[in-house]
Image 1: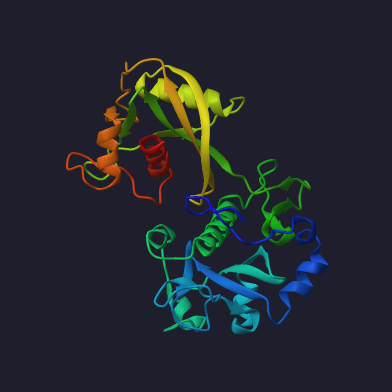
Image 2: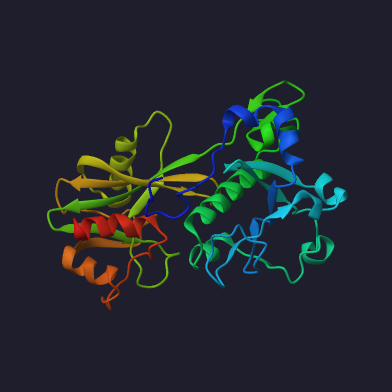
Length: 315
């Protein structure tokens, strides 16, 4: 398996879409003794450093998803929770269970002293196996989609979960709805030996990053890159090339990283999305990547923007 630099990539599970649509297979798989479940509570996965609960590939004191057998959970907890299938690894099935309806999961579910529910963004900045982090991102994104798509967009009736989490069906009009991924372009504009970075008000003071925006209907990736750069910074683009992508479970997006060659260093900020911005030399960006620039800094390695900038600096 290839190892990609962007976090939330490198998911080791086989999603076996040809099997998960079979309700009998799902029912039999859930009941197997070696099938395991990772609990989520209000968007946060349950993680632990306790030996025996983790999947076995973590370092000492490193957070890892805490996998439990179905027998760990009481029937009333299972009955009030959303269960989704994640995939297979070495013929072992991995599921996730959303116990958000429980008000006190540590005590009501029996999780006290076994680990903690951790914010996924916080967890992503800690030492964690990249494959396990990708699995958690997969589960969070699917749960987020279900929580915001409970009702049929065609008739307004409440729909029900199907295919172990990969479909919702409306019992009133028989419409089928599938988990959506929102494509977002994130691009580093370059011109000769410089790259353009901008900053928004919500950024930490001193941080500059690549520009980004959602792809609109009827628009190619290249067209979205050119449009966003023009709208946000008045930059005219002559060539767009793909770099890499990053699943982003906040709430359910796919970041599509690109390099955009600009026609000139001319720019005009829209002052709506971007408050400040400018062209930075390769040497300035190299110092920022290495943490040696006191004037500004760039996003950390958990962000795809970091790898776009790093690619420009070192290639």
